[in-house]
Length: 448
Image (cartoon, rainbow, N blue to C red; front, side):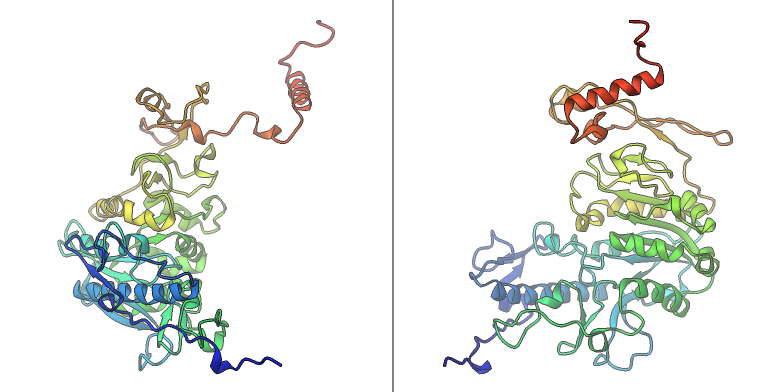
């Protein structure tokens, strides 16, 4: 009878996490290129074996992460292991980086990247492709923050804390934390072994087992340890971490401890509905000193909705509790949001930092009725693009409002017949006729 021994399985390929050994180099534009053909970036399909290709990509991504981490260190961000008090890197931990002189800063910026990305990475497709390492990582964000002022009376650059919600799965053999994506690509016993069992006792990190715990640990352990009591804190949260941060702050007990320290909060690509928030202090803060960015085809920094959300499908009927802006047409997936909108985010944070009495402009946006469809997509030609409409901003009984003109896309307006979708055409007409009769907008049978 045929029997195959474990020793007879094909061996796992070995790749060193080094760009040069993998056949890549960094050109003068800070882009990683293929050594044998400099016109190409990372080449994933080296063979027809997907496991082989994944092993190579794991090594390549680790090499890119090491380069970015060394650049962050060169920018003056020191390494701190969590939970605090970890004696050795051999113990389970997650790494973050923060400014060496953080305790002396009057302003501190905390950045929470996506939980699915490796530490310091914004978009792997940019860091290892067109755009380059600095653009696709936190390096450019750190460089830009170092050019800002802490306040109108303090010209020193703000302190920085780079959280690490991505690398929370401990890899004992590699003695480092990995992302959920990377952990499935680590070397196995053979080429045909698939997946790794998730054992919390072996792979969990104390007090940082998931993004929710990590957010809590940053605010309740890292901030008190390294940030002085008088410093003001700005927070930038991307993607799923926007919801995690807002959910954490939307608590009366938490807000009583943390709220007075916050100066501004920017959420990018989140879905937390502030209309259902339970903490009134946090709701007021978001209304006055919060800002949201969402994926939208309008130009970067175009005002999309007010604190109450969108009256149409443009914001998915989500009320962010603060003015909501577009990240621009180039940010078509979440990992590109901060890459494209980073300059606008930092510009607004600087504006808030320089004005201690800053309060968001009061706006409420009304969308005009949809124009008659001419059969063209928005942006089909110049005339069509210029006739997309405008929004009118009105006020309430106690506060004045300004009038702002922006482009409103017709393609995001809901169809007038959406409620009849999937219903027979004749039946839909009958329902519409009865609705008109009920409203008194149609002639009665007696009048005919």
